[in-house]
Image (tube, rainbow, N blue to C red; front, side, top):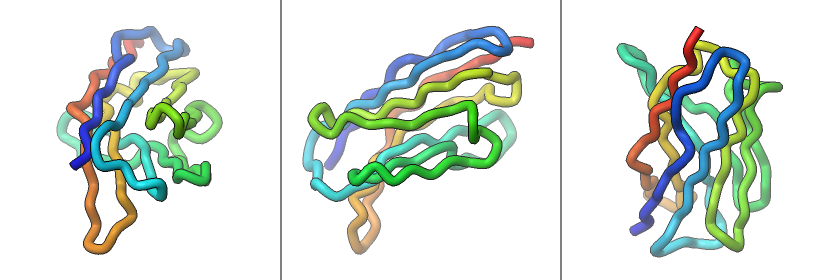
Length: 118
């Protein structure tokens, strides 16, 4: 089992910035992927960004150039730096930890609200 604790959400104006953090604890394998999904009201959960333990990153097209995902393996922590925020970025952001195992085993954070006002 992996436990995830998120922090850093909040209310920000259009064009502002926020930084989300997520720290994992528990049974953490060296090879893994961490990242962020988000879910806006009435919409499906979507992948925002991911980063592997070897630092390969992936972004949704809608956030490329504005968001940066990074991690500190020593602290088992993943970050999401969000710049140039838009109202359409408003959502609950969920951190996840993928053990890259078979069968697949993914743990989720509790979610943190990000609200961007226009």
